[in-house]
Amino acid sequence: MKALVYEAPEQIRYNDIPEPTQAEGETHVRIMASGICGSDMHAYHGHDSRRIPPLVLGHEATGEALTGRYAGKRVALNPLITCGICDYCQRNLSNLCPNRTMHGMNRQGFYAEIVSIPDQNIIPLPESISMTHAALMEPAGCTWRALQLAKRVSNRPLKDSHVLSLGAGAIGVLTSLMLENAGCKQILTGDTSALRRESATRALSSEVFNPIEKTFQNTFDLVIDAVGSPQSRQTAVDAVAPGGTIIHIGLHKGGDGPNARTITLKEIAFMGTYAYTHDDLLAALDLLNSGALGDLTWVDERPLADGAEAFHHLATHTCASPKIILRTS
Image 1 (tube, rainbow, N blue to C red):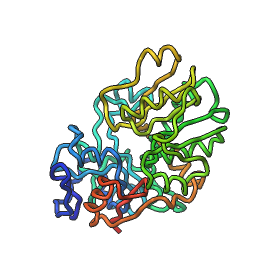
Image 2 (cartoon, one colour):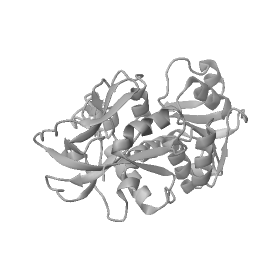
Image 3 (tube, helix red, strand yellow):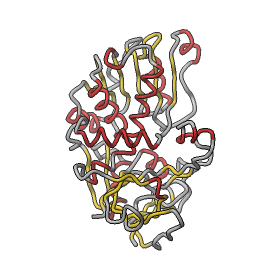
Image 4 (cartoon, helix red, strand yellow):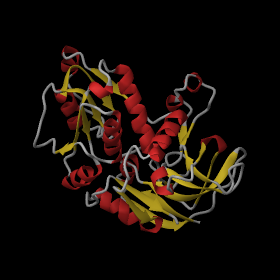
């Protein structure tokens, strides 16, 4: 079968690989659509030690089940494989399972024609949603979880909040779309890329700006950092109001962070969020299917065979779309 294989830093090739074997309790799925995530780009640049080449990347996908109880059905895939028995899994915190593995990280990813995946990680799709839009379920699940944590931690309801969303990639745009749906008082989305800002402006009804040209001090009740760089973290700490909340979802780069003294003196709630539970994915899929997040025309669809070119365009910042979906059919 054909697959897009990460062979070495900045080397990815559309090639033949063996079809996966089907283990007990797993289903073969023919992949139809799979998204390129920022973490796939980190691997592409050789910046993710967890993703060791040669490896088929990709962890956002939809397809058709070929075997098992969903055979012949349209399905979305939860790439996070958890044990189901540890304390975290029992407390509905499966995203923190210490025994977790993940497709596209330490299992074959979804940039392939066929994948074998545990039965419990298959989510049947309603007929009313396209394969491409349903492939946004995974990043939307990340965003959904982030906003549920924000609701829990913040001292002000979302509808009464002034919110800053940093980053206009898929996570950032989905964040702002969900915030618009929640009816926040004010939403601003910042990105340093002119191309991304143009795309975000078309996708959103709220304001989009360049955080290099326009800065804020002590302004926002809630800041969502969907970039995760030292610069964006500092921007978040500067921009959040005393007593406000920062939700850190971006995984761009570790290292230097904001001044802990400032966080303390402003009494900022600073919270990280990682991935999603199965329930988060179901909620995100329902929201996508409802039309509450708009027409999603900002998604860029390309053939899987052109995946290497898509990675190059993302790496050279010559792609305006927040999300590229690779189609196998």
